[in-house]
Image (cartoon, rainbow, N blue to C red; front, side):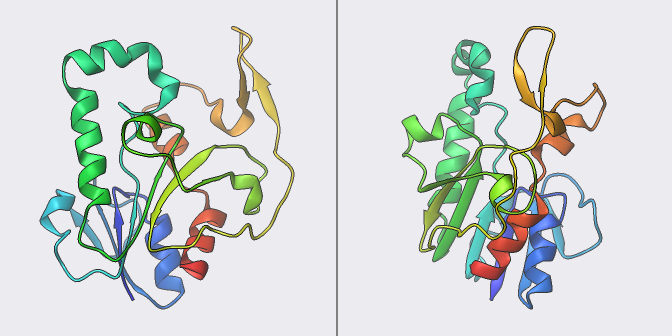
Length: 192
């Protein structure tokens, strides 16, 4: 099967599909973190190729409800509308099977509700990270290894965050937080 992993620089999902014997390629504006088939550029350049499946990870910066306090500014300057248009382009791609993943976001209210909501603890990682999946031509993922939900950290402001998410400021903190957990990538590759 020919698999396109859209908006992925890490290579995690791409490599999980390759390990299952598929021809997979990641695509992102950033270079790949791991050696492997990767197109560095605009996903629109390659969407029309003959793909059997696309797993898309559109940036959540202007979509996630965790950033709702910034929505007014993002709506006023068009960033949120552009992000939603990008999601619509991915969902409407001429590919028979598509999974689009994002955290809880305005995709649910502005486009459509997700088909499934998953957590890393359902796939072998003691962590919570609510992840929504919008599916086209694919069945929901089946949990593969249900474990505990993991430790939580209470911030100075009293907010409770997953321990893995509570990282000190760094240049690559956003990359670590946005990465797909390996167990979820493996389940996608084995089940889809």
